[in-house]
Length: 341
Image 1: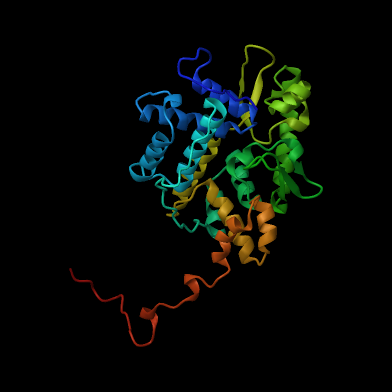
Image 2 (image 1 turned 45 degrees about the vertical axis):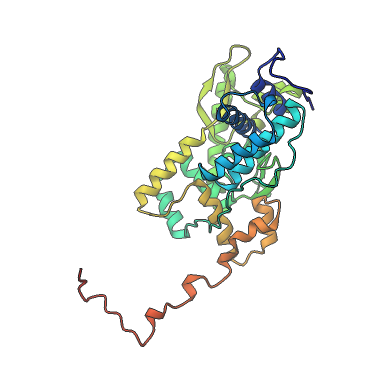
């Protein structure tokens, strides 16, 4: 793991944010983490008038993080992400640790019940979807996948014989297995068959390569044209590279997000639902079907069962099982009576 000791602003060489980016990459963090850490390091520098971090320390870090909590009112997870970025910056790039942050003003953690769609609402949304957005939406709900986990699936990740999906490098860079919905097997089989025909034609034309993980790219560069490594949800366009063959990426997540938002609006559902709501609905509906929580934890890929416990509101009677005092026999509410201003 590279570390730059005794860093000073006068030292010549690569720019600070470039060194930060390279240090994070050396730790094999995800591209999203790299992007987030560099973002918070840049915000920290700009907040203090473009001073070099080597000239600052714990007081400046506390001031920035307290500003996020008090003035920006960011979520606790956002503040913790910014703190992690700055700790990484000082420890692995500047070359020193930040001392005690006990008096740091913390963002208040909000207790939120996840938004859940009913089975009827999900069926209504699916009626307004076509093509890849339909298949991706159904798969996210039926398998409990996150959006990127779904879009980054490769052909080899779907096991039709065992009825399983292998999620590679999910959140926390962990692999897990989840169910393949039996209702989607026929549709997925036809979809994969069409993809194979297209791949064979594109391979003959020299356009059958896809982007690979860095480790695979270096060890097996020929795998880029292998059928097993092709995307289940490929993008329509091919990236033309200056060196080597053109590469295809998976469909961009915003395409599915836009299609889902449009279907939600057309269905008339007023809930603030997103693609991630499908994952919440997956877990909640399994609990309603009396599936044990440890199994759901494994299917969801949660590190701790306490994370899965947020869905246990479905195990209780909830508001549907409690009668309002207004609905009793003593008070007779007549909605037909006109309201007066």
